[in-house]
Image 1 (tube, helix red, strand yellow):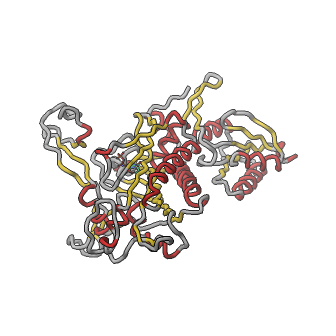
Image 2: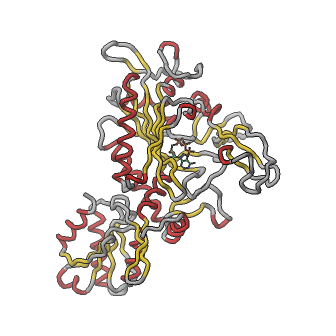
Image 3: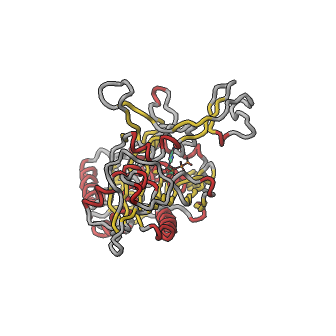
Length: 451
Ligand code: ATP
C-alpha cells in the first residue's frame, strides 16, 4: 500500500539524487535546496510540460524570460514595497521568530512562552546593491514573483508580435522570498521557481476568462498524474484578497502535511498595467492604483471597434515548480510487497520521468554486450523523448530496483541472445512484466509510452 510520509519522500530524494539541502557540507541553509541529477530532469520535464501546454499548444500566448534583478520602481508601483509583508512576532524568551498566523492564543510554539513582541510587518523581498559602490544609493530587488516584468514588458511583446487582446504572456523562472519560517521540505522555500501566465482580456470578459483558467489549470494538473481527490478548490474570502485582486481561487493539493496551495489563479483586474502606466488619468482604471510619475509608457490597447484606448484586465494562473515536484513525487511514490521484499516504485507519468529508458548489458565487462547497449542507448536518445541511460552495473536486479525508485518506465536488457538475433528483454516499471522484442518492435513499444 502507498506510504507517503514526509520522511519517506525526503529519504528517497536524497538517496536517489532528486533533492539535497543546499550547502549541506557547511551545515545547510534553511529554506534552500538543490536539485540533483534526477531532480533536475524531473523539474525540467514538469516545466517543459507547462510550457508546451501554455505556449506551444496555444495560439494566443507568447513567452518571455526577463531579468531576475528588478528595479525598485517596478516593485514600488506594483505595491510590493508597501504591502509584500508578513506580520512577524519574536519570542523574547527563546528568540524564535514566527508569522502571526502560526501563533495560537499568543503562545510561542517553540517554548510555550507568552512573552512575544507585537506583530510588525516584515518585507519578504531580498534587496541587493547594484554596481561597484555599495553605498546604498543604487539597489535592486531579487524579484518576488515573475509577473511584474511581464507587465513592464507588455508593450515590447505587443509591438514585436501580432497579438491582440485577448492574449497572454508566459514566463517560468526563479523568484525569491525571505520567508519568515521556511519549511515542510520544498513546500516553503526562500528561492523557488514559478510558472506564471498573465492573460490579458477586455475588462467585461474577465470573469469568464477567470473561470476558464481555473478549470484549465485543474485539467492540466490531472494530466500530470495528480488524482482528482487530492485537489481541492478554495475561493479566497474577500477580506483575504491581495491588494491587486478582485477574485482568487487556490488549487490546494493534499501534501503529506495536509491540503495546501499548489497554484493560485487571480483576477488582477487592470491593477498592474494601470499602475505601471504613464498618464493614468486618460484611462478609466477600475483598480485602486498609486499615482505614477515615473513611467515613460502607456500600457494600453485600442479597441478596434470603438477606437477607444483602454487598459486590459489580467487573469493570472501562478504555479510553483517546487510544490509541483513535491506533489508529483508524493503522488507517484508507492511501496509494495514483491516476493517478501518491499519494492519502492515511483509511478510517474513517462513524460515526467527523469530517465525514459535504461539500457542494461547483462555483463558489465563484455565488450560486445556493452557496445550493443551503447548503440541502442544512442538510437533511443535520438528519438528525442528525453534522457536514456546506459546502466553498466552488471547487476540486473540492482538496476531494476534503482530504476523503479527513480521512475524509469522501461528497462531494456541486452544479453547474449541479442548478439545473435537483435532481440532484447524489456521490463515495464509498473507491471514488472517482461517481453522479448525485436528492434522495430522495441522502437514502437518505446514510443507508446510517450503518446
Ligand atoms: P503561500 O500563501 O503559501 O505563501 P502565496 O499565496 O504567497 O503562497 P503566490 O504569491 O500566489 O503564493 O505564488 C504563486 C505560487 O508560487 C504558489 O501557489 C506556490 O506554488 C508558489 N510559491 C509561493 N511562495 C513559495 C515559497 N515560499 N516556496 C515555494 N513555492 C512558493
